[in-house]
Image (tube, rainbow, N blue to C red):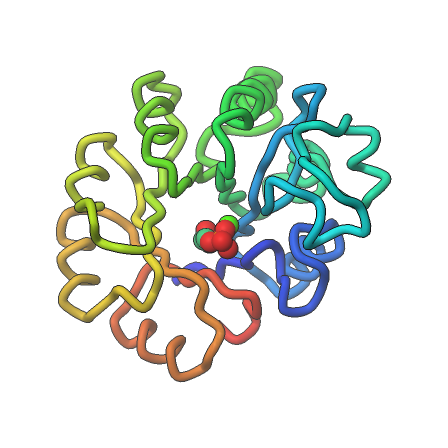
Length: 219
Ligand code: G3P
Ligand code: CA
């Protein structure tokens, strides 16, 4: 079962910071989860929100600032995280905006063409299924993860349509039966964001394929 560090190991360090990713590596994760948005100059930045207000001492929209400005606020670029990781663990990249999609794919394809990474070093996920469908149609070979927080649309049907690798549900949606049904259809299942020990133990007893946690050492 994969131990997946949420926004690095954000129970121990500032979310989506280099310190958080290093902490997760130190704790022995199998994968890092992070969020991407795009700067004004088209650089892929690792930050959860579209705005700076919650996680920095600045204000305004990420997409209106240059990457140089954003780096002074402690926001890493995706490239910096990829270079920190050095292929030791999988990087689960969550697209928080459509604007971040093409710059991210360009960066990953460049890394692959330079022989520095392979497609399977990454797992691309989003709550925005249009983004996932668009990436699937490009046939680039990246594993795709379907994120969902409700059952308004059937995630299994969508995952089949785009030949996804994995389903990433809010853990509260799961039962033993749904876990088994997802796995029997050939998908991995990586629920989020699971921090309480009793929830972790229940999901482990159901043999989920991985758990996304702020405290990856609890896994
Ligand atoms: O990828 C799982 C989880 O990170 C999704 O929710 O809001 O933490 O990005 P959020
Ligand atoms: Ca996320």
